Length: 215
Image (cartoon, rainbow, N blue to C red; front, top):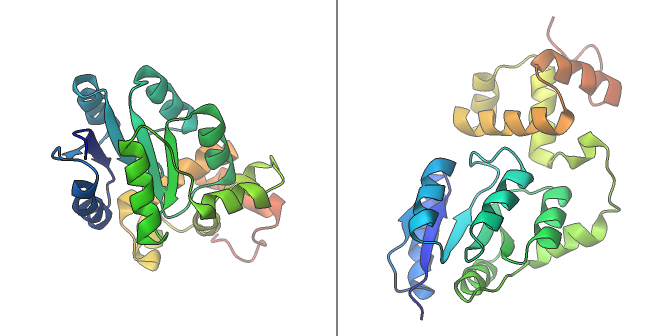
């Protein structure tokens, strides 16, 4: 077992605690914790040869380009992207443009998550079967709405119906922070800046009809 540091970058406390419990199987070094991008970069500046376990969808990276830039800045660092959902575009770009990024989902079997952590500790990468299936089953469609995950699509529809972030969080039993992060990702992917623009996009795309949104 090596002494490679693991840096946990996941703002879901339950997941962060579970990952912290698994890490001693893969490293003798005490795991570190980063709560935002600035803190993560600070830790990597002192521990460049680290493995970062990152929930990209809940952390404050603006897009996959931002992550790839950081990964290029720290070439000795390996990454394990772990999330409830990841789009085909994100998975494809991460796997094509970097050899240091592993992909795994939070609902993957435990042995697959351990395989991803072990690969990161050995300066290798691991792509879980679910991610491979997503890559194989998509034809590479480029329409913006097709890049939304299932969760983002549901939240986009709720936004289009005029629901507030707080209302959406309550309905989905999620935190306001989580919905805010999804909201930012949706706006970026659709190329819009306001909830009204989301509503107009949803109407044009046929996600909702005019009777579904609030006046």
